[in-house]
Length: 185
Image 1: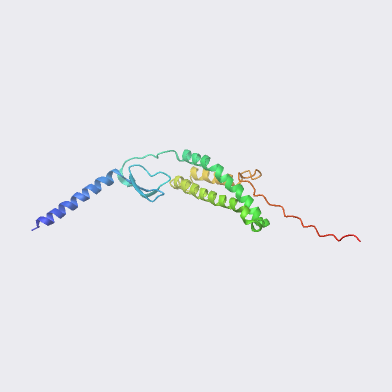
Image 2 (image 1 turned 180 degrees about the horizontal axis):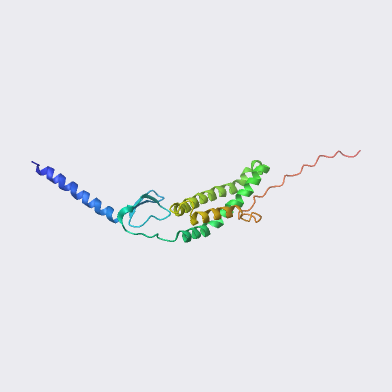
């Protein structure tokens, strides 16, 4: 025979289970933002958020993509191209300066460019993460992945003859020391 407290506990647990199951029925997607906060949604996560739980695929409901992946990639390309191209140009300038030893001679003068390169490297990582989320579902042999490869190869061919948007550090000319001349006799 069950005691009244057992019945209350059992009723309580059944109630909690019912509430939890009704919550998950509406929120199929579990997304984690950049700040670490977890959100539940009935729509797929944005490309800026990580998907933690995927919806069940055997539900029999036909879903369509939220947007055209190629259109999303084209927008991503246009948003990131100026900064990624600047990164390529800056990389060429800094690489040449390292080879010539200019950075070792005047590290403080090159620090601004190096800091900008670090910022642009972070932009590149952000671009790769966002593009990866779009192309991941399509696979390696998809038209989206081919477009991404073409875009990345195009970045290598940025017009490096034009200077990067960052100005070259000015090199102070060394003061010339003239040898002392002997007085004429």
